Each structure stands twice: as C-alpha cells, then as structure tokens.
Length: 387
Image (cartoon, rainbow, N blue to C red):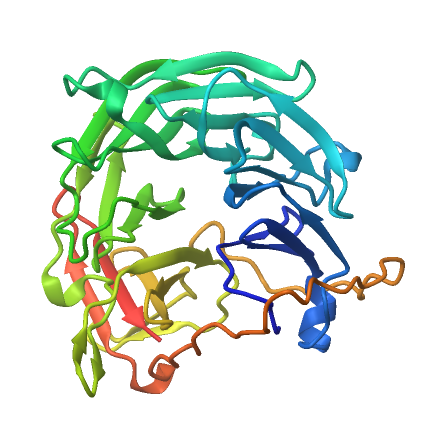
C-alpha cells in the first residue's frame, strides 16, 4: 500500500478487519479485506492530530458497538490529552488528564472480559487506569522502590498479560540502569490491585545508542512464555513464569538457539540490526517433523520479528516434550467482504509518496534449520524453527 511518509505505528482492530496506520500526525484507516484485494487502495477514513502521534492502541474485542474499530492515542502537541478516534475518523472521547502521557494500552489480547481496562503510563513512573465513562483516572500503581531516582523513569510500555499479571517497562536514559522491566502480580480485573512485583534490569546488551527505547513483546499464555525485544538490541530474551513459585525467570538459551536480528551485509560493511516489532500468529497449519524422535508435532505458534533493516523473520515455536496442540492454535478463516458503505478519502499531497524498505524474504520452510534448547527452569524443551 503506497503511503505518503514513513509509518510510525500500525495497529489492527480487535476484530482484525481494520488496520490503523499512524504517519506523524495523521491516522489512516484501511479496510483489511479491501487492501488485500486491491493493494493500491487508499484509506477509507483518516484523522489529523495537532502534533506527532506518540502512541496508539486499538480498542479490544468486547467494547461497546460505537467503540468497535476505534483507537486510543495521544500526540506531542498535548501530552495530557487522551483521544478516542472512531473507525470513521471522528473523535468519540477527548479526556484531559492531570499527568503527562508516555504510553497507553487497552484491554487484554487473551481475555475479552478486560475490555474496560484502559491503562496509561506517565512520565514519572506511574500507571493509571482511565475510565471512559468518568473521563478521568480512577486508580494508579507506582514504580517499585528498586532505584533511588525512580521519579526520573517514564513508563515506556504497559500491557495486561492476564487479569493477574501486568507488565510495565520503565525507561530513563540518564539513569543506571536505564531500562527496567517489572511484572506485577495481583488482581487487575477491575482495578490496579498489585500484591507483589518482580523486576529485571539489564536484560539486553545495547548495540545502538539512543535517548529513546521501544520495548516489543509477545506473550504465549498457554506456555507462560514472554518474548521480549528492544529497539536498542538484536536479541530476543525469553522469560518463563512458574505458577508454583509465582516467579519469572530468564531462560538462558544457547546463542545458536536464540531468535535474534541478523547482521546484514552491505558494500560499506556489516550493519547491526535491532528489533522494530514482534507478533504471534496462531493460524499455522503445517505440522513439524521431529526426525530425532521419529514423530510429527502439531502446528505450533509462529513468532514474527521485524528488524530495523526491513527484514521480516518468522520462527516456529514448539515444545519438544509436549505432543499436544498448543491451546490457542486456530484455523484461518476467510476475510469478510470489503466494506461497501465506507468511501475512500484522499490523503494529503504535501509530501511525496514514499515506500518503506522492502521486506527481506526469510529462508523457505523447506530449508529451515531447527533450533532447539532445553529450558533450564523446567523439564520442557523449547524449539525455534526459522521458516
């Protein structure tokens, strides 16, 4: 799809029928079925913010009908204003807050009952629960007392993993350590009631220097695995949760078995690449042949990794000690018919049309190498297969 600029965010609606693309201060809404059938199709709606968009998230499944397909966002011209924009590009809510927004998330990907949980991270280390009905923050949770200068840390990422697990990433480039990842345990089904927390610092060895860090993560609830990457490093770290001890641990996999961003070769020299996005696909239909054990494993989840070079890598993730199907694997279903009632709108022509860097094709499934490692915190074995 041709775009008039470089996208900064891309989010998919809860029902997976609408994709919203943020270009500096503009949000473009595309109908997924339409752009697949006609890639050159223009957006059917758009919204213009007063400043550059700093974060955006999609409304989850389970929201009221008028909110379906909408997005929440905030922009640089007013970091204390939270906007809810409909899929037609209209303002549904405008909420003025008494703190500076740094990150936002809405609902939980794996629990539709949490659709009312709209969480906002601020610039001083607090996570706030915002009520759309009341138009204000109704609860908050502060950064644990793990550093002396915790007021310097902003909440760069916040996400609900479940009704009992909350992930918060803190960032302060002038502090030591600059990056802290905290997992809160408690009751988050209707508020922010944390009972305990566990923090990780220096998870990554930074390969680039920047005053800004973006944390990317993917969560596998069936196996309680958290795959975490950062825009400052090349390697994906794997954390595993043990329900018996209520603790997370970092899995120290052999280097050859890690999912990571490759070093790209150029005429002027090699280029270190870092993580720009991650995701999980649960509609894989290809079983995996385990030649060593002379058996066939069911289709696994697929971990998608997008790099700063423009490479798009796919890894199949499976457990060698389990022969049962991963619980969230589902069959792919046909897309609905393109939206007939929404008229395409033209985008601004102030800047020339540019295209993102081409995706580098990963190696084919037939030549993929299986990557296996034993999880040190359990008797299971995890395998990565790059497809």
